Amino acid sequence: MKNPYQEIQSLIQENKGHDAISLIESIDWPDNLSIQKHSWKAQAHLIEKESKSALDEIIYAIRIAKKTKNQKAYTALKKLQQKATSLSIAQKSLKNKSPPTDPIAIAIELFESDPQSAIRDLQVLKEKADTECDPKNRVLTRLALAHHKPIQSVMIEEATAIADQEGDHNLITAVKKTLLQLNIPIQPHIF
Image 1 (cartoon, rainbow, N blue to C red):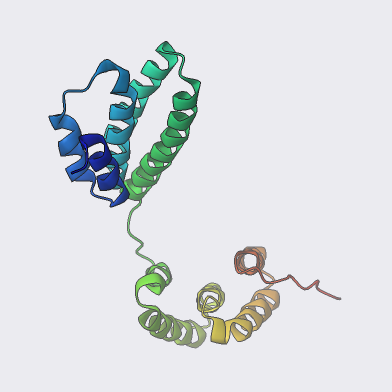
Image 2 (cartoon, rainbow, N blue to C red; image 1 turned 90 degrees about the vertical axis):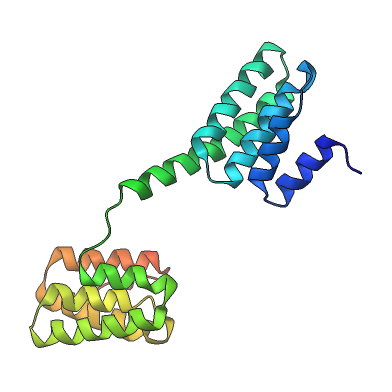
């Protein structure tokens, strides 16, 4: 049978955060292992995406590491703190992000979960923009469709031609940013 410390490490490696937290809280910890206790508890909270609780544990462990002049633990805890801070920032930005209302933005978000539906939706929006002679949406739908490799070059060419024809600097910039995002070399415009 594993000792409780090995069991905690196993639970963390198996991504069983709640189980690890329960075990950690059930142990009467000696003072010389308090850094490990808080570090493991922070890692368990990170597994459960509980960034605030993880940061609380890390800060407490950092204080102990400073007080005991444990540089190795301090360095490791600072790395763990960066990870927890990144998670916290990501969670806050997702929480504050409102869902898109623009049909093109909705279709782009759909790309990750259901690319075929996104392509279908964008094709419909592209046809609508063409019918309505709406240059902005003609360019934007093509740029969104350019994320689909099989039609990427055709969509980029069409978006570039429309943006150039309109002479709209915002549309030209949108094409350029999409090219950079897709790692496509930008061809110089020859007059």
